[in-house]
Image 1: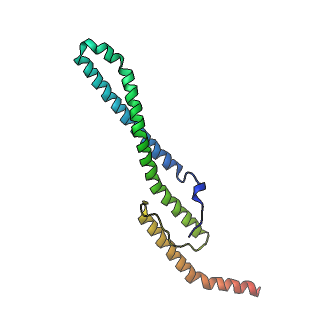
Image 2: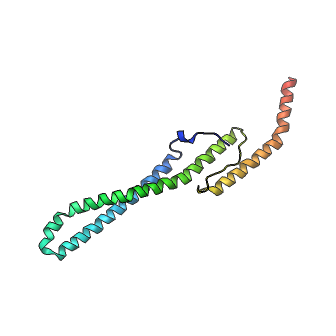
Image 3: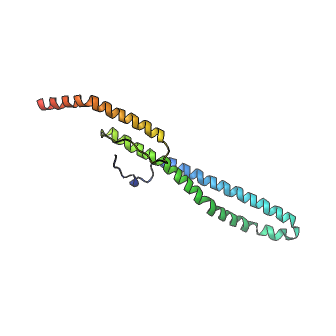
Length: 158
């Protein structure tokens, strides 16, 4: 099959990868803000229930919010990043393989059948691209062989 080192190419679709990563981080940030608002309302409610201690409870509110935000950051961001990066690899990897496959075909090289990993997305697109390319290879071999022989014969005659 095609021999190309895709590891040298760090970002296949950088705009897509950065947008997805930004959306995931924004989602995590929104969750953290929502949690902070919920905690602030809960602490304020508790302070109203205990008026004799409300000043000390409200005095601790910034520290409570900071601590819960840090806990949320530690608990939310790594799983969100892992899910986004894992999901991106299932899309970006096949796009890179299909791109490489098509480039090799356009260079005139005979390419073998395109195979993606079982859990990759875009399986149907890869099958369709492979069918088109394999059909073109068959047509190239059928139509190109006599034309290539004729050109060789003309060059040898000249």
